[in-house]
Amino acid sequence: MRRFVVTGAVLAVLVPAGAVSATAPPDTSPAPADSAAETTIAAGSMVTETTMAPAEGTGPANTSETGESEPATIYDESGNPVATVTVSGAQTGWTDYEEGNEPDEGHDYVQVVVDVASAVTEGTFGIAVGDFILQDQHGFVTSAETIRSAAQAEADEEIVDEADLANGESIQFTLTFEVDANAGPQSVFYRPDDDRLVDITEIG
Image (cartoon, rainbow, N blue to C red; front, side, top):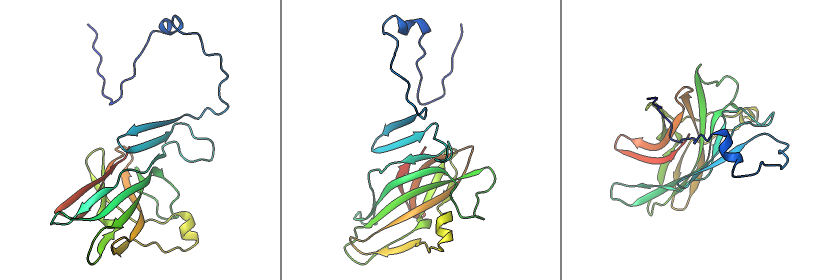
């Protein structure tokens, strides 16, 4: 008896070649001019778009973008909400970095754009790029960094990587993580200290 082992989260159904032609006529519509295929997958409140075959000049084939997700709420020790974090985009295989800031050999950059909005009623809510970590698919974690793009470096743009936000104030951070290319990213968390861990989004 022949056994098959399937290890993926998505199973493809194989149908004998003759089974389709018996029930449906062949598709005679003309093929689209552009052969690039784009797949959109709904995963909870997050939408992931993966470009399978990008047109020339549009970027590497391993680049994927993640659409805006539902906000993650951050609470204080008394259980009061003090801020929300919303992911507005993510990109794996980011290569538009400043010259001299290349990732280590065998690693890729992953960028995640987050919008942080304060909900404190008194004082301010402190937030920094280094408060975020990424866990790869092998379970290892890395902290977020601020790495300028080539355009930002050329313009000598200063990037804000921390802020104290009063009620209603917000800031957008671009988080850059260096990930083992063989593992790939899995999840992003807010971890300002050892006692708190907030799930922000899943990637990949």
